[in-house]
Length: 79
Image (cartoon, rainbow, N blue to C red):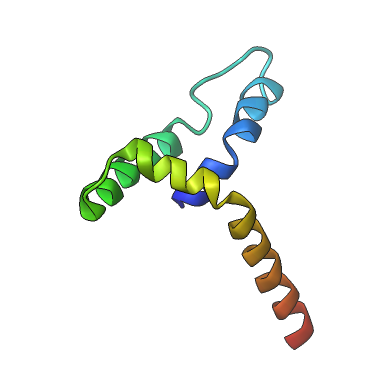
């Protein structure tokens, strides 16, 4: 969930503006709060900081997206 939220932050900002007549920060606010809780928990369990976990997520964005695409491709070939 953290990875999906991290990699969709920009799109969420666009949707907060697009789906309403004006920018509405309440859209996805529960998801954003859950993200912060999970981020803090993962950082504590790893013995690092939330900022370091976020840097790692940013650095592995392409790998995550490619892995997700491969999963989808594998599903299509086995269906």
